[in-house]
Figure (cartoon, rainbow, N blue to C red):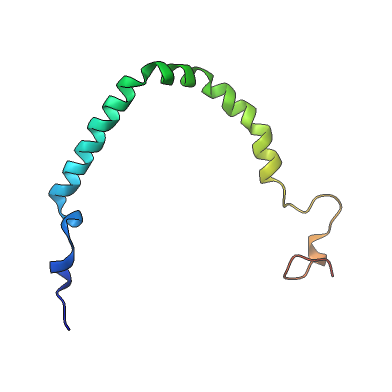
Length: 83
């Protein structure tokens, strides 16, 4: 069976649907922000401090696999085990 690919695209590829969906997201985002302004003001006030407090944790977890603790990475095989 030879199906026409253009006929089966559906309504999600229609540019009008995309603009309606973007408009819906903008309206929903506006009301979400307006209704939760008090909560956002509290979070935005402490956000810089939370980012600063997260830095040590980020370094702890991001630098975990660098081969520290006296290991020589050239002595490992393909599976990461010592030879």
